Length: 110
Image 1: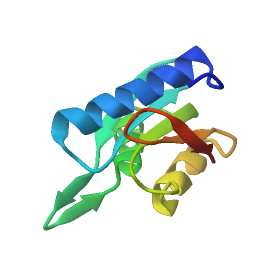
Image 2 (image 1 turned 180 degrees about the vertical axis):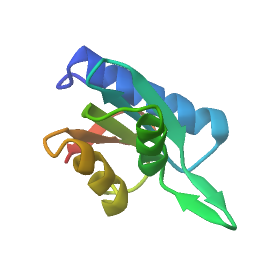
Image 3 (image 1 turned 30 degrees about the vertical axis):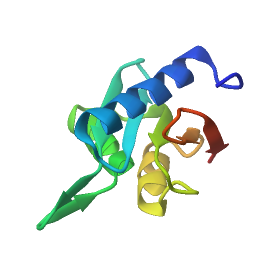
Image 4 (image 1 turned 120 degrees about the vertical axis):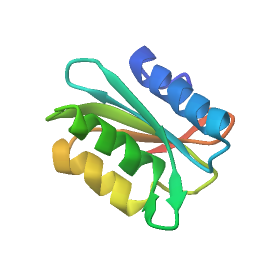
């Protein structure tokens, strides 16, 4: 992750941890404007389905966050899913969202 700032690299590490700990297809982490982080894995229940990024944003918002500095998703996907990306940008349109593979290598930033 040579191109990431240290705090953004930490988000990738936390997202990888969430994914690995739960065995979920995705892990995500977001950092708010006060520097606090929120971590989540994808949720797949019969009555509730959330991407990891949606779940991390929901955790942040339910804690009173009004803005995000950055986010990271770890997934096999080729792109960050649109609903999660929209949720981040609902709070802060300019917040970068880094997509990394399971190995932690960042593939793209949206």
